[in-house]
Image (cartoon, rainbow, N blue to C red; front, side, top):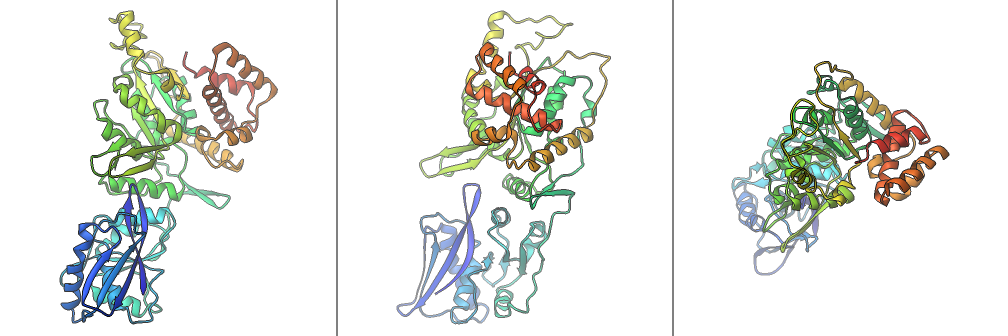
Length: 502
């Protein structure tokens, strides 16, 4: 028996598949077992034709392939090349078990690119499961951007056989590449960043409180709602927020690239976090993912490690807003269907923008609000208390003034976020402040006695829930990080409380 590795998709992640083969005596046959899709079972004809058209003998034996693990549903034509090689090298001493082999075979033995190949290998690389692979030559240009993997490109089945017959002398077509962006290293982990600001905070005039809140949200990955009159800069701030977010690990960059491929985009591999901005008329399935037969990823899953921005927040359906509570709390989303149950990571920074009333003029000093008290209350009631309890920062933005001036640039704000991130990581903290567990909260959120008194007073006066108390502590921890303070002081708690919804 011989074995080589391939892969298939399960949800949003690739799963390693061991392709095992046996050639035994008996009536000639060719069978594939292990929950294979139609595309895989059809490979029997492609493999047989590729062998016979290239003067290889097709063994008159009972040929059996097992795709393990057997309970995993496999799909795609990337298994062709691995099956053909196992047949040809069955009697040789060549060791194949440490290799990944991908490629669809033409009837003449040409090795073709498979549409699933790029995100498959991206996912494997992100999980640290792959170091070397034989792939179609035409895929090399794209695959060259994936770091820490050596690729051997082949145009024909004959070239693949040559690679395994001369493993010691064959050099990879592409050596392991590395990220070429600035980074800093803390405890053997590299954090990459880039100083590119397509949209700059210098364009936002005034709104100093909102910009301060945006800085805190970026540094700690805190959920934020911006409330204000139309045109006051809510969307401007949200769209600029992605450029000042904390640096990314190589794993996060690869994960974002994989999600870009699943959306049909060419990945850039830049250390820029993504921003997803679904319209309020979007269906729940497009936002959360779904499908009648196979559960597909939605905007919430695609926003992983980035920003999920809901403009005109109260206009989203009640079902969507309530369903959003789970991923906001647990940083993952589960989709259950008759044929599949899938769990996607969804660790995002939520940004909501809303008007103070249906007409938008409630806070405007120059325009008259046309809404009745009942309409305003009905508008605000679209956001339930449990949903709002998951928001860390709630900012009521100021009215636009002709005398408003620009203050901080995105470059300056990004520098502050990076410095806070370094301070946080040197403390030994692995996750963002917004995602601290109860144990990590106790470990990293040490408060002075004055800060504890202020928090206790706030708990009694505002009847804060347990979740709200923790969120105040986490926001205060981020404010302290921005000021490079080891202990959370009284002023940090007071500022964190000022961003609570009134």
